[in-house]
Length: 234
Image (cartoon, rainbow, N blue to C red; front, side, top):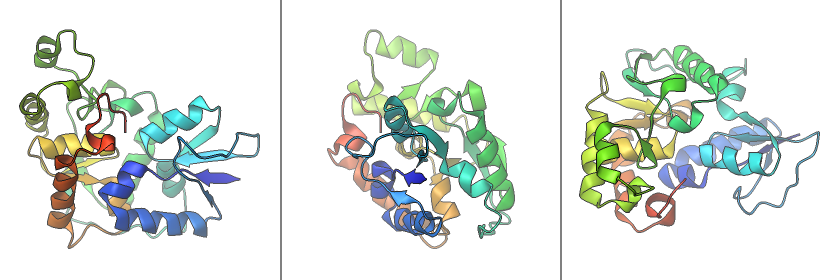
């Protein structure tokens, strides 16, 4: 039995794609859970928790669920209708929180190949990733600026923007594909052009490019706990 834990952050970031993903999950006979922090399911030998949000993974694994990422499920689905994005060339950002998950790295690259997207790796990728938006970013400037501060979101917003700009300048090309809402928002905050891989997979990107970024910037301007709490893990 597979239980899908939808990402609250992605539901806010791209509700259209989030709904399409729920439809797909139901077509695969998955049970749809509530928020990972409050859902009442209990782990058992016959249950596998399905996720694509890093925060969801951390939460359900802390409850002792066996887990599998949606990236792996979709990559291995012989009947999945992968959209064709021939001609799209991007940078690829691996999330720091996925650095110990090579199965995600492989699945994501397999998906990009199946959608005919060519990509260049970020300077620090796979297990060497050092970036997760304003949750985690390793640079000398970060160490010098933060000192005893334990979280980037405790810094002034202009300092956060400066650090995110530093990261954006490191990418070989724009736009940047990511698999994490924190990474997405950090890239956007730094003036880059992020694309969430799930939006591409659900075939909800074309014609919505500017609208998606505008919506995300609006979310970042709000005092919403999933985007601006101190500290934040979403």
